[in-house]
Amino acid sequence: MAITALHTAATGMSALSQKIDVIANNIANADTVGFKSSRVNFQDALYQIRRQPGVQTSDTTNAPLGTLIGLGVLTSNTQIQFTQGSPMATGQTLDAMINGDGFFQVEMPDGTIGYTRAGNFIRNATGELVLGNSEGNRLVDTPTIPEDVPIDRISISSDGRISARASDGSITELGQIQLARFANPQGLLQNGANIFLESASSGAPVVATAGTQGLGTVQGGFLELSTTEAVTELVELIKTQRVFQMNSQTIETADQALQVVANLRR
Image 1 (cartoon, helix red, strand yellow):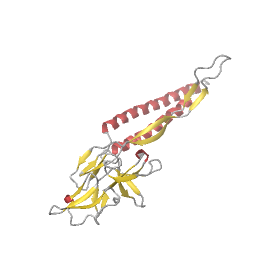
Image 2 (tube, one colour):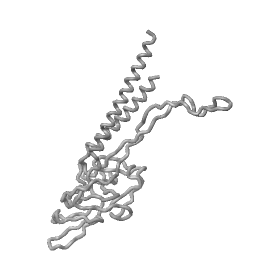
Image 3 (tube, one colour):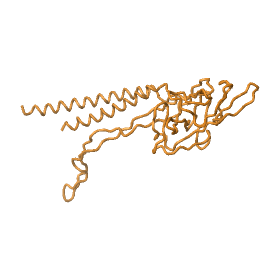
Image 4 (cartoon, rainbow, N blue to C red):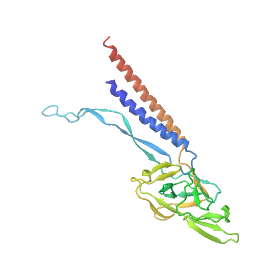
C-alpha cells in the first residue's frame, strides 16, 4: 500500500534534513581557523521481506528472486574530514600551524586535555600561551614568556621549540610544544571552540615532538584555514535540496493514491 511509501519518503526527508544541517555548519565555519568539515553517511533501513528468494516452488524448482520492500534511509554517522587546510601567513609570531598529522594540546576547564588544529595562540597576563578562543584554553606545558620580551622577537621552529631573540642577537629557548596524534582522529568528539576531545573510538593519544613518530611539523607565523570548500558545499546543498523535493513529491503522490482508494467506497 501507499502508506509504506509515505513512511519511506518521510525517512528520506528526515535524513536529508540532517545533511542540510551539517552542510550549513560547514558553510558557517568557512572562515574558522583549524575547522574540519564533516559529511553525512547514510544507510538503507530494514527491508520488509514479503517473499524470500530461493523458496521452493515445486519439487524441482526454487524461486530465483524474492520480494523485498525497502523501508527508507537512516543517517549512519557524520564523518570529520581531516584533510590538510591551506596555510595563511599572518605575520604573528605566536601563530602556528601543523603541516601533517597531529594536534596541539590545551587544558580544559575540568582538568582534562583538549586537542585542536587551531594555532592562534596569544600571551596572557602571566606570560603563558593560551588559545585565542572564547575560553582561552592554556597550552599544555606552555613556557612562560618574560614580559620584557617583545612578541616580534619570539619564534617557533619546525619541531615546536619556542625561542626568544635578545637585542644582542642571542637566542634563548623558552620551551617546546608537544603534539598529539590518534589512531582514529575521526572518532574524536567535537566540543566546539575549535577543540576536539578524546573518545573510546579515537583511541589514546600518542604524544611526541613535532616531526617524530608520524607527527607533522610546526610552521610559525601561519594558521591553518578551514577545510570547507565553498563550491563543493554549495553543490551538495543544491543536490540535497533537489532530492528533498523528490521525497516530498513521493509523499504527495502516495497521498493522492490513498485518496483514490478511500474514494472507491463512495
